[in-house]
Length: 272
Image (cartoon, rainbow, N blue to C red; front, side, top):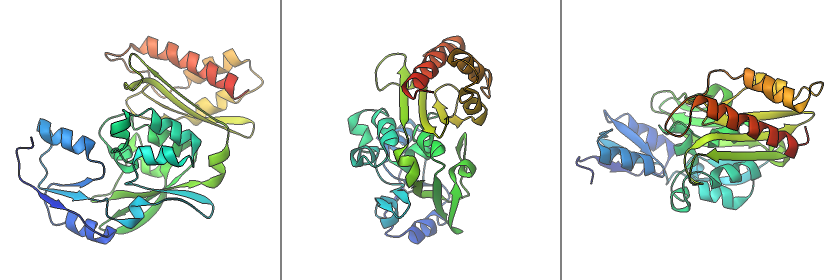
């Protein structure tokens, strides 16, 4: 039960959504709604307006357009996976929550949610994707590396309208490994995504730190073929931007052990 009255709005255009946002003191954008509903019921948030973005045409696109795959912010994870257009992202989406929730959680919701893992960001970071954001100031298209720094960095009233993924990234050799402490759909101890690119590798991680990240220093260490695989893995671990976190799922030392095994397996699969 949500013990508070609020306005429920269904704009038909992105401009209408941004205009609605400016009319209220505590508005929230709504895509799949799984997180908002849970937080409302727990009393963690108290919106006076919920703005449902699912009627906006541009937010529901899922198709190849020229040299890019375009995915709307309101496209559910299950639809992204079922399309098969980006195999790496399909694997990532298939390991987030269960089947029922994958049909509700959207790309934009996962990127912008408060749950720290935000695993869809991994594939976008590796692909050097462009994200299209929309808000009261209009649209802006920015690199994922500018828009995502530990979390999405949105201007007031903005939402994720689309992600545009370069077509060449869709066909690169890839690896996705998610290690959990218990159930398959649990939060990750280590979630690793990788793309082989030329003679090197791109790597992004979630679960290890309190935020997803891609480390160029780790990539350089892993791509240095003058060193043995074992040494490259050790050098990459030394390049971590911070000490792995510790929580109920595992200690920092255990996460580092899991990371070492996962990196070694990744290098074997990609023949690095």
